[in-house]
Length: 251
Image (cartoon, rainbow, N blue to C red):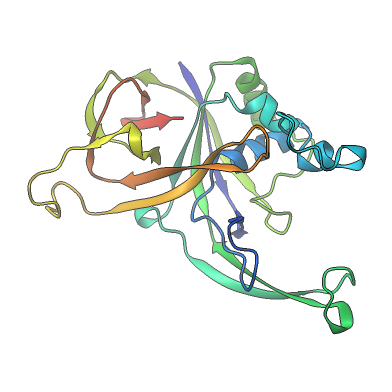
C-alpha cells in the first residue's frame, strides 16, 4: 500500500468550536478530519457549505445530505501527526473589529471579535492511496495545483503544504507498540504497569474530543475522543500501518 504524506502548516489556524458563540470563539487544539477534508475539497474544487445552503436551498438542513466535499471524500483514510511537543500547539486570543455594518446591532455597527488562534501550527498528514479520490488528491498535491486556496479553518489563515512525498506502507498486524499519530480513544488499549506514571511507560498523554464526521441531517459535528501519547498501545483490527519505522493509525 502507498500513502501520500505532506507537512501542513501555517502562521495561525482557527478551527471553531460551535458550542460557544459569545464572548470568545474557541478553537480545537488540532486539525480534525472534517477540516482536513475541507482542505482536500478546496484543492480538488468541490463545493462546500455555501454551495449547499445558498440561494433557495437555505433552510433545508433536515434532509439527509452533505456538502459536496464531504460527500465525495468522507471515505478517505487519513492520519494526523502533530509537529508539536506532546501534541500541544500554543493558543492566543486575538482581538479585531468587524465593521461591515450588518455584523452587529450595537451603536456604530462595529462588532469586537475575540478569537482563540493556534500559533505556528504544523502537522504531518498521511492519506492512504486506496481509492480513486485519494489518487486524484495525490496527483493534485504532487502537481501543486488547487482550484481554491486551502486555508486552516478560516480564510484569514492560509495553509502551507510542503514536504510532499509518496511512501510505502506495510499493514501492521494486531499487536502492541507506540502509535505515532493521533488516534481514536476506543481504537487502542494502554499497556502500562501498575505505576501509571512510570516514565518508561508514559511521559505524556494528550486527549481531546475532535470532530470525526458530520451528522447526515443537521451537518453538525459528531465528536470522538482522540489521544496522542508515547505510551505503548494494544490494537486489534485497526488500520495501522508501519511507515518509516513508525506505527500510523488511519481512520
